[in-house]
Image (cartoon, rainbow, N blue to C red; front, side, top):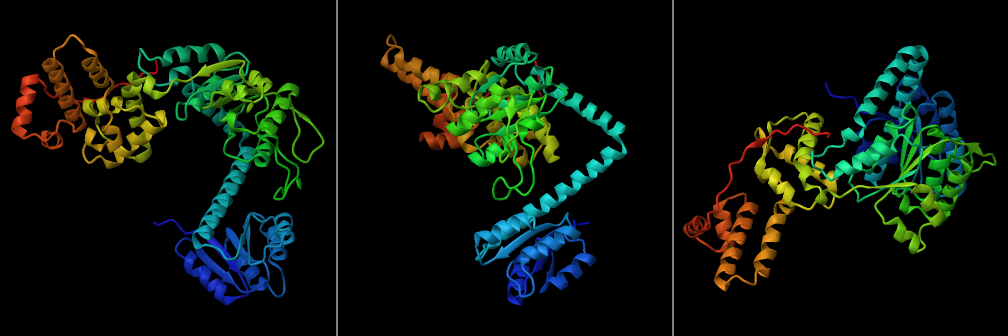
Length: 494
């Protein structure tokens, strides 16, 4: 049974405008139309409408005035205005009086309208879900409290230093020991490392093994928002503090009270916001935008960055006093290229996780594929490896992941030991010219065969040899392909 389309109502006194919108939207939505406010109210009484898209300029009533009426009778319905007029007063009235979610200006692009309507439907569904959970919480507080406690224990079990996947001899062991030592102490921590190295995972491990483990953990990416929006997200705002502030909003610092706030990409915030954040850390108080009242907050700060903050301080781009406030303790996460020994274990873990997500299972991954993954430098770190595993699983047509499923740019990577061998060949001043050429030839043959997964036809074509000539050289240098088995490693959490 197919899922019903989201229901929307288009209100416009111009029939041509309605026809145009209906034509581009009917594949994505259950479209209802009205050419007057009276018709619209009748439809709203009769149908379950999730989103209203209303023209602003109509003969008897404005779109904002109609949206005010809709807001009073059907507050859960998401309201949007579409207009060819861009008068700022209209926009402000639409936001403040009608509680408008979006103001779309003409001329509009079909894809933009579809996207905004889909986002509005998601917002409608989220509001209903929150209302349902709120009602359930009031009706069954004890049962839900027990469920929340169980969920919290699951999170605490999952987000531990033991939960960081690695090999027994991984260089991550020292990092995990540091997390274990620092977690119980109520000090600020700065986590550094490249994107994709697991900074948020580390932050959650610190929180769920601290004295604040039963309190909220709140995360914000500081590099994703402009100053005003980020300040509102962190500290909250009062109604009317800026255009679009239609109601009071609690900031993340207040939401995380008595818990932990994780500020990712802290190196991206501007000097003005750095100063405001410093004051919050010093005074342990926040002041919402548009408010004169300060509110005390008790939070543990965990910050993260992929930048060298000490260098940023030296260059005058980051406040030194804020740096020392944040970096009471610093934890540096190594990039994946420095922990290639962990790749078999990470691969086993990520493969199991991905099979659950995609609903597709395989027996395992071949040793040849693992070797190819270990040859690559992984600039995107664990996140890039996760995407590669997902890609391989989607493409897999049998019961194992083989090397031929790996992305071409990953397959082209030269193994570290071969790069080292090349250096040794070039630096061996005692060897004769013939001996050095033979060593070099042997390494080139092996590197080419590995890249082509021991496909002798492709290797011979690339090297300009016949298959007979290639076979002769392989016999001469004793080069043979190792037997390929399916890897089924247990996930080691140390």
